[in-house]
Length: 241
Image (tube, rainbow, N blue to C red; front, side):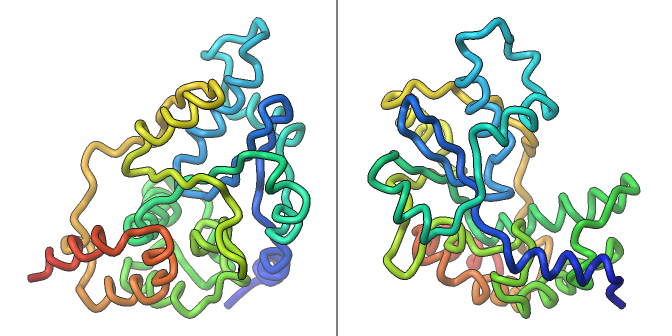
């Protein structure tokens, strides 16, 4: 049963807007998506912003990022971004395979919290830390983007509207080094320090049934099409043959 706190959070979620970082000097904007190298890119943005100061890389931690973040980022609707920002800034975002993104969210927000006794930030959706992955998927596929936690929203919710993509450039986590090098060559952005590295990605066939996988594919079908992940999804489906 949802608590009053959960209900309040659900109301807040419906009012959320994408978060965008803006570098005024370079006229560059970054729309961030949770579970897509967010910490690494934030770290790179802050490194770039303090590059002329006496602050060294080792001093850039979560606390410093949280201090600088409000000065250079804001929450804006896509309508506002398209109207006021696009065309004046070079806008970019990063995406990842929607299937692996959802499993990564489950691992980080459910499994890891269960192991460490951490906080359940998804309890407002009826998700509990003892929930297995198939049950997790069954829960989230019923919740539309406007009502779901940002970690589980479609990639398209952050980067596109009825007119199409709001950003000028979409990089991918799977080709992060090369895609970031393109941005660095244009604007001199610092090379990100990688966080939350996983040594080996688990095969989805060891995590869930084909039925569960197909539910994820259905829920995030637009992301798969819009960001060119059909081939990658087909490769995952072949694991079940």
